[in-house]
Length: 68
Image (cartoon, rainbow, N blue to C red; front, side, top):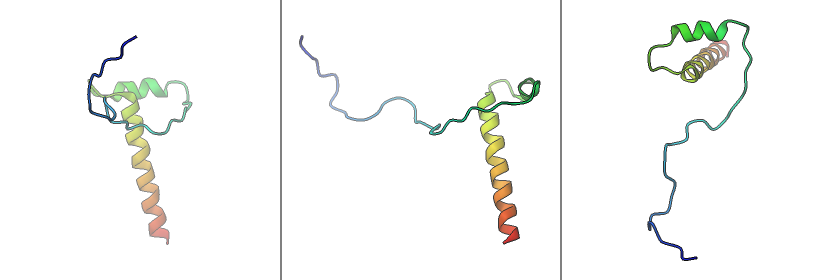
């Protein structure tokens, strides 16, 4: 079988990986439906949850700094 050289470029192709870590989470019944009602047309639930977690982390970090 003959192999063909397609490109001389070495490296990754495709989208930049933004999700390095995963964690399954469980929510009380109805929570995901409430989130879905608040999403804009093109917004994804995962983006909403990531943003909410980041916001809460920043809030708590700031509170810890104020305590110190």
